[in-house]
Length: 209
Image (cartoon, rainbow, N blue to C red):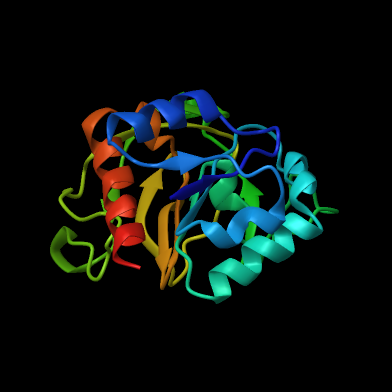
């Protein structure tokens, strides 16, 4: 059973549709105390990083405890940014901090007509040798260059946890993965078959735990 976290900033309708289409069992826990009955956690999200302040306190503690206990965690868009230490978009709000680094604003490039926010389809560039994604369970079945749908103004840095990056005037982490922690900057539920494959891969991870 997947815990789909509702903190008032998630695009839950489209995520629910994707999970239903893939035959996943999921529920939205009403309180952090319920997390113990779930095999995996999905934190979706759209909008300003300040919205994650709703997760400060019991939710942050419960999700952090679950991750440290081996429960798979999947952050989507703002949910992925929340995995990091924090964001310049709302410096007063701490992230979950399970991945090092801070989220910063994209700059764009007026000369190339690369506007901010970055909205639309863009490619994933796998960071492994010869365009592969070594040891990535989330990207299984996909090839470098796969296109997915983005809508964001801030992005996470390219660190050791980054298994795929994307360029929009500058390069940022579009897929992160470390142990039982996974995240994507784009919206897999709106990214056609490539996005569904990523969600399917996470569900496979959850079933194996």
